[in-house]
Amino acid sequence: MTTLTTSSDKTAKPVDWSKWIRFALLVMAGGTIYKLANIKDAFYVPMQESMGLSHTEIGTLLSVNSIVATALFVVGGFLADRFSTRILIPLGLVGSGALGLFLSTFPGFNVLLLVFALLAVCSDCLVWPALLKSIRQLGGSKEQGRLFGLLEGGRGVVDTAVAFSALGIFVLLGSGTGGFRGAIAFYAIIDIAVGVLLFIFLRTAPAGAAVEEKKKKAGLAEIWQAAKLPQLWLVSFTVFMVYVVYCGLTYFIPYLTYVYGLPVALVGAYGIINQYGLKILGGPIGGVLVDKVFKGASRYIRLAFLLLLPVVAGLLLLPANPGSQVPAMIVTLLFSLIVFTMRGVFWAPMDEVGIPEGISGTAFGIACLVGYAPGMFAFMVYGAILDANPGAAGYHIVFLVLAGLALLGSLVATALTKVARKAKAAAAA
Image (cartoon, rainbow, N blue to C red):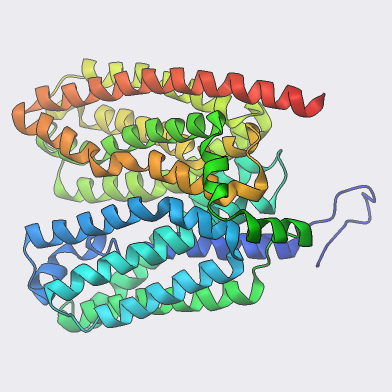
């Protein structure tokens, strides 16, 4: 273990550089593993032109990926508790990379369905629950908010860098079929490289032979043991409430475009700031607030939900005309920033409420199953509201729905805060 202390402070806690190297690699894994499954984010039109796909076919691929992912979250958590995360995470990354190299050959639609299903296996079953467990193991109870906040912010940095690098390769190779093939291959090679590095440097937190033997004997009982914990369901529903509000951020771009007449150039700049810049800022800000100010993620999330209410009020009161473009941009970005601070720390309560570390992988799998469920229906609900209510009225209804969800989320977070307080008192007794 590499450590460092300063001569002026002999009592300072040594810096564990190996820990932060592992953390950086986990952040890289989290920022790259979903790139191939979400390749439409930067290359929607090339997917259509080079692979001969319609809008419906692309939507079907994404739906298959989401359904398989949701079905396998719990399985992934179970695997994270049964097997070494040092094996699972690299296996998922290398598997995803191999699928990406095959994807660059542009197989037919029926084969693509299988590829996108297997990408979900690699990312949401093998990597994500194991990655969350590994992040939790890197620090003690006083570091959870910071670590998960830095994870989200770091993923934003990696996400941005990798996406723009792939875009650069696409342009360099002619912005056509060859460029798209090169961009896919780049994503694939990055996944494989990060997987190999993690296999070399990642170490499972020492838990002792007794714990490892318990894992081997426990089997499916771990899932039942985790599912019986009421505090796990509170964490899961808190994540659910944050995520269902997060899904609403998608509609700020068409809102500013169609209601406020935002120019195309500004729409692009706004999109980069809203989806990447605020993710980079929000996670670390949320982590620092949780660890240094609120001393608990559940307490901060409760307040953050309530802070969204006056922001929505501001959106509703703004005149729906081009003269209010700048204020509308500022208010929507403020809403997004608050949501990203919550996203950065919404896994930290796992430690606060006393989820046993021995079943934390299974617990994360169950929480992912519940917490990320809005991705399967929220966009359809918000879209239906907008289709049924054209113009500013539809967006205002969506914003009112978001306000109602935020209020409900604050109530769930309040219940979570009470449980966390009791768990802390019990641990101190």
